[in-house]
Length: 316
Image (cartoon, rainbow, N blue to C red; front, side, top):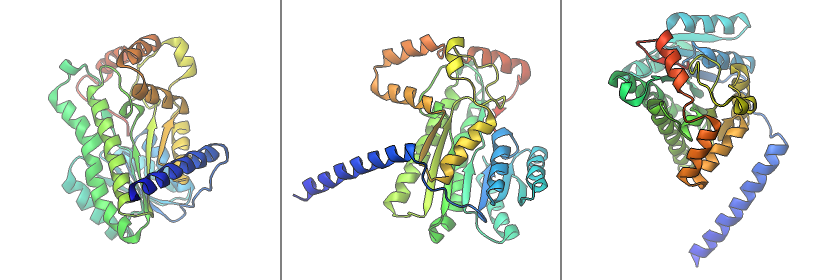
């Protein structure tokens, strides 16, 4: 009897949340204030990371900037300070847990309070066919895009849970929801990032830590240079062009400020995500071929060989 009562309540809750989110898609929900929040951003020296720092600062947040490239990180800090914001720059290798934990304690000591919002933005891609990709580049991709998430969350989540206040943002990719050829390292790491984030969100809900929010951001190709040369069919690209970094960050910020659990940018990319789950494998293959997605990374690989023959491309 209890089972059927629970089943009925589950179905009613499902209908409620479907209707609620349908309304929210039309009528914009209330935006939360982040004035005074302490926001830590990884990969803050690069394109998206720098823009995130500036956008959070505009909203009144104080930002902590983590990047392995000290010079680019300082440039981001200067951009924030020049507009009246507060920025603290640290040179951190997020793939090394000892470095993460040490700098987390240093931030608490220097700033005098706990980080309340964590934006895991750092990311890289090897840009090689599977059998051409050196083992060390595959390992680097996994360490930056996946393993680092564990270290940063373990460093800051305990304080968020203790205060029942915080927000964890994972900048993943649509290639963490569906895949394509020749980016096995990137797809594997981003699928892992999506799985990590969703499992963490479920854990917080199961423990009834309602004050700690989570947002998973899955953008399409962004014009940061990370996927320079990537090309789909011209006619399709008119409908689905690469994203401008500012637009991508603004859409992500919109989702963060309304505590949206998942956002795909642009919304059109929800479609292949659904198709992957609902259609036969062969149907997805012919769709990829029609769009030119099956070989879209070929020119990207050639372009990378010319510009960065011995390393990975950074998204940060």
